Amino acid sequence: MAARRELIDAIPDRPNDTREVNRRTFLKAAALPCLAAGAADILAPALKGGGAAGQDDARFVVEAKFYEKLAHKKIKCKLCPRECVIDDRERGYCGVRENRGGTYYTLVHSRLVSAHVDPIEKKPFFHYLPGTLAFSIATAGCNVNCKMCQNWEISQVRPEQVRSTYAPPEKVAALAGQYKCSAIAYTYSEPIIFYEYMMDTARAGHEAGIKSVVVTGGYISQDPLKKLCVAVDAIKVDLKAFSEKYFKEVVNGELKPVLDALVTMRKLGMWSEIVYLVVPTLNDSDQELKALARWIKSDLGLDVPVHFSRFHPEYLLKNLPPTPLETLERAKAIADAEGLHYVYLGNVPGHPAENTYCPKCRRVVVERMGYIIKGIQIRKGKCQYCQQPIAGVWQT
Ligand code: SF4
Image 1: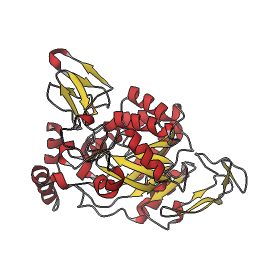
Image 2: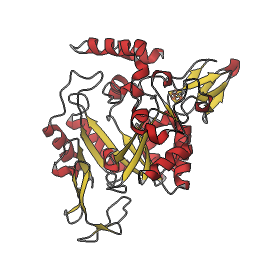
Image 3: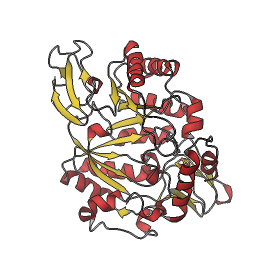
Image 4: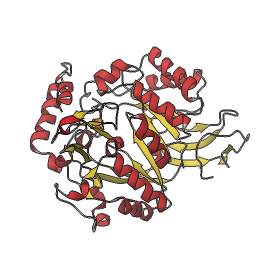
């Protein structure tokens, strides 16, 4: 965890930062067992029988799928591009994978820390089964450390530091069915780091007739990504910026592997949408936004939905203001000018850029108000007015 510590220590001096770092450090040291107990609180009755588990519950520990054994009981994790090399009895950067005697294990299989029933629009997926519900789950952990993380209480902690509930894949699939969800969504923290649980749950979901959708930063290696694309139905990628500098300084990750992941998803026919959180002064220049839109156009095509989302001060970036509406509208105008077909604004309920417009006749084909669908004018995947195909997966 040394690299993560360094990132925290490297935060520039700003009025609020010291307070935030101290608060986080304090919480990590003293009080975390009570944090982020969404699953236990919201679905406790439903999960009874799966049940709360002790922190040393062996049911959470399953051999990892992507790693290489090295000399002297070391291993190299091959799940994400960080490729941690880990000594015996140590963990990788994400804190949820452990080397035990030269064998690598995930510690978070079936170790649920958060579960909610959300509109699928909240993920957001706008072109994937709109108006349906997603049974949304998470474990602790993440393979990056974004300074603006909204879910840092579960993403930036080790599994022992949050209350968890034992929820095996079949139980999750059954609950998703019980709550009339069209899909199970792997979300809130970073689902790549609970890859084995996600894959097993997607299989259980499919056996029960329920889809699987992934909400990720896209920082994943190619081999596990290709297998993931076979197992799930849609992936939303938080493309956090279009510069390596931002990824290095704000995310503690890399841009290139995320772009490679998006291209692979596209090639494999995976339905994908992109969210770009527009952070004032850090990733909102005309130059960066234009480069982003041009890359999407040339490498992914015009039909990938792009959501420019409003930033709210969070976690280690409380010194910045929320994204001005004019900035979001400027980002949309730049992407529209490049010809992208489906460009949305996020976190601005009631804005006309929440709607889907037919790229040919420009009429509204999906009308939204926040997460509520007010009308869908798509039949058999086509605009009801002019018969233009509308990219996506539609139930009408
Ligand atoms: S998944 Fe975790 S352990 Fe594996 S390389 Fe990524 S950060 Fe390291």
